Image 1: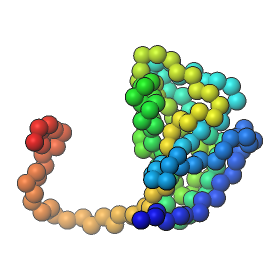
Image 2: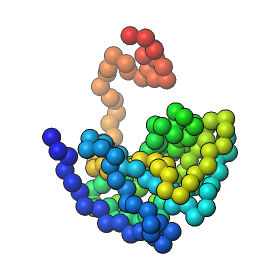
Image 3: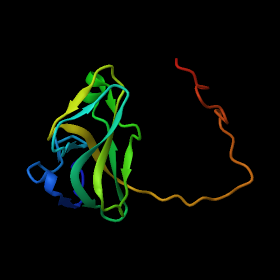
Image 4: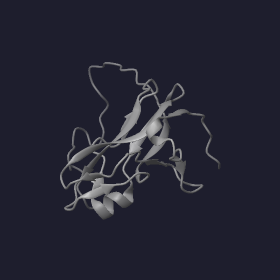
Length: 153
């Protein structure tokens, strides 16, 4: 089954003029790679957070969000993650997309221009309509949480 294609307006800022637009690495990829539009290398020391520019502004169609997620290779090899993962770009945001990177590793990582720093997934948004009630239906789990189901089958 082929995924539907949704048109997203994108404005490239001057500091991203020579970088490719986000793209899918394979035909089956859910996420598009986001690139660092840094003008000079940026070092993320162990334990630090940085905001990395992408040089992109977007206008999402109504009913969609863009979820920003870590790249598994950066997480495994360098301990780089996104502290607000998944980050959400709302349909009404028109500013530059910035990626907050957190280095949980034990060595600094240098972010170079054009480096793949995160992935973005376009997702539909469903709105909730709260219905306040006096009681909720009972379940086997009930109010158990925070490890109440254990770690083994």
